[in-house]
Figure: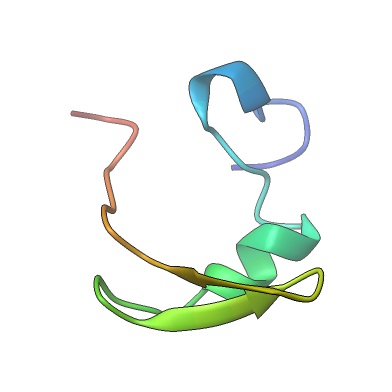
Length: 49
């Protein structure tokens, strides 16, 4: 979603955010680095569920 729809309290990221850019194309179980820390993706959900 765009910056207007983003809501950090609801875990909705803007596609323009640095974190969203790191997550693009990743799947569950993949690791990625963000701000010097390594994270593992454990869940991916649609906002339409």
